Amino acid sequence: MKNASLVLGLTVMLAAPGILPAAELKPVTLRAWGAYLELADARVKARLDGSQPFLWADEEPGRLRQLRQGEILVTPFAAKASQGVPGGLIHDWMGSSFIPGARLADVLAVFHDYARYKDFYKPVVADSKTIECGGTEQKFSMLWERHVLFVTAALNGVYEARDFPVGSTRWYSVATTTEVREVVDYGERGERLLPPDRGSGYIWRLRNMVRLEERDGGVYVELEALALTRDIPSSLRWLVSPVIDRLSRSSVLDTLRQTRQAVGFETSSAGREACGYPRRGAEGSGL
Image (cartoon, rainbow, N blue to C red; front, side):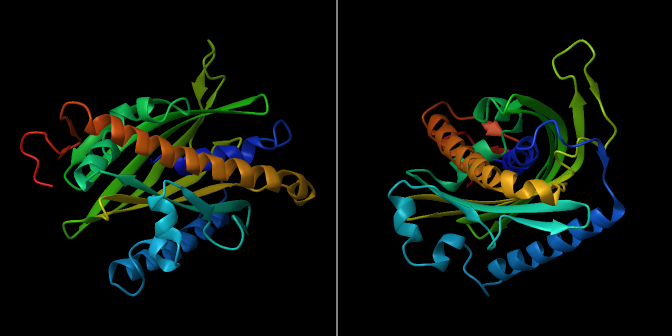
């Protein structure tokens, strides 16, 4: 599930293939990203302290009914799916789904099984590895590959994730990239990694914010995917923006659908432990 913002960002930049020269992340762009994350953190705090509903799905009548009927809801978080900042674009999408018959422990077992993200979220996730597991803090890496309009991009990213249990039925998690490096000539003999913050600018920074709540005979899964990418020239936005919006929505939708499928498969198989979180039925599970 933590690959969603990466897929979103790759979709944005690959919608305009072959027309964007090499770039470098500017300090002013990074400062704008930090300011946006502060606003996002404030929204999270409001959900955790009860100032707002914990779930986005609870904010409007009808959303919960749609989710329990099997729909997956995906929408831009704000009026516009992307926000221009100096030297870049910030993309922010919200998605929500319901997994009937699941329990919080089932979803967490998939959610923390970083080594198997390459199985759960293929073909976008070409490889994945667990680096560190320390209770509510984890570190992992993923290699992403994305094809759009005959253009291929490959990126290697390292995430730091932190979990926040909220009682016995709710869970909140934040995963943020500490490093994203473009892979040049991926799959070829001359394949190499570029230094961080240089290259095509497909992705500069990523964050995923996930909320889980067990109730109504299943688990609600909500994902807010944020990505910082390079800017798109204003002369091309009229052409590229509709493609970006359509493909970005599809990317978040696919991530939530694949998560639901992975949870269904795991709950029907033998118990296993993923990064310290045993699935229901596994020995010693306390969730």
